[in-house]
Length: 503
Ligand SMILES: Cc1cc2nc3c(=O)[nH]c(=O)nc-3n(C[C@H](O)[C@H](O)[C@H](O)COP(=O)(O)OP(=O)(O)OC[C@H]3O[C@@H](n4cnc5c(N)ncnc54)[C@H](O)[C@@H]3O)c2cc1C
Image (cartoon, rainbow, N blue to C red; front, side):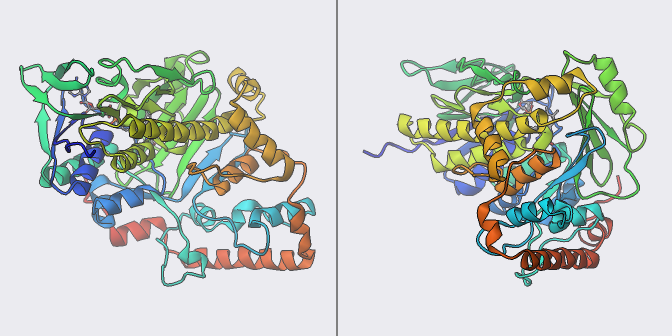
């Protein structure tokens, strides 16, 4: 029997998670539900999520955001991948570029032919077969030319860098215009009803009581409802991902705006560099067992493009996930549901995919346990697979200059990651399981970029003659080179389409 629809939705928190949820639900639910969002200016937001992955384009499309306006409003720049410096060995440099590697030739994927030719000493570096990697290296950018489907120019995959606080503000304006009611105030407690223990209201400092049927907890690390009220529990993964702190600082921009994030490994962590139109965002993610906050700050400040624009801000975190992202009538989104460190810029994507899942399993007043369980199963799967990919970056290193990296190289890893590594070592194969986020191409670039030794390649790569493969690979490389040559510089593209007003 169909239950009654719920009417009142309360979103707790107005960071990136809260306002993305408000924007999406106010669009998708078509004005049929009463959506209220409670946030506290006094508490503020984390405000450091600045790099994204390509799926965010889909989110922006669904909520009806115009790309150029969005880029102007958030001081955005384009992102073609992440450059990793010093991750395999000191001095190594590679990029995890978005999009495809090469072009399919015959029976097996392009990278298998590359593996074969590499053994013969006849392959160029892997990056030369990727348009995004070569464009990033040359500081060039343009979106895909959909009118050229057979050219690498028709296949440019990208994401964005943006100022997270401005993104939240932009989404807030949009959501309020679509009927979301914003309530400013500090929540002091949540109340629960009998007999099912559902949260029925949150109470604010000024005595206001905000009642609801579905609560979406976007309150950040504190997990005001999911943890402080429902005591859901947290699964801690710091034994696999030991970094537990970050220091963030903006600095003046470098001369040219680079269309990629940079992640530079230091002795006890790594540093991000995210170029925006008005400044560069930087942060040092590190493990407090190996380095003090002062030393971490000194390392960060010694590796900036320009003058620091503020004092470094300390953020403490615990990598892991909430045991249930959906508990009773509370769905946790964003940092309230868990945290995976930002090396592959996955947190905002996790917000997006959780919202999508909430829409897929949107409840009525019956709050079906079957739907809730499936939501939780899918959330766990997604988190665990991303976790494995992130652990790979740490575990697959050959650095001998620091205890931290040595510990990472020798730590026990999850069985699911072990299987992926064994499979790659055997014949360079990557099997993408179900809907896991990172594709074969993502894994291959990290395996290769961090020097994973492999025993062999796909036997069917030998069904094509060496000369045919060589000729084909060379033509792919040449075409990519020519295509990059006609792309505008990243700076020029932004100046022409989406330059923000000078601040
Ligand atoms: C070091 C670091 C780097 C990161 N880098 C990236 C990145 O590059 N890419 C990426 O995708 N993600 C990144 N993230 C993650 C990203 O910052 C978050 O996913 C994103 O900002 C979402 O945060 P949130 O909205 O869940 O929480 P918050 O930003 O913490 O927002 C919480 C909200 O809850 C409200 N609130 C809390 N308590 C109360 C209360 N009692 N009463 C009323 N309101 C309350 C607050 O006022 C605020 O509005 C990074 C995170 C960290 C820690």
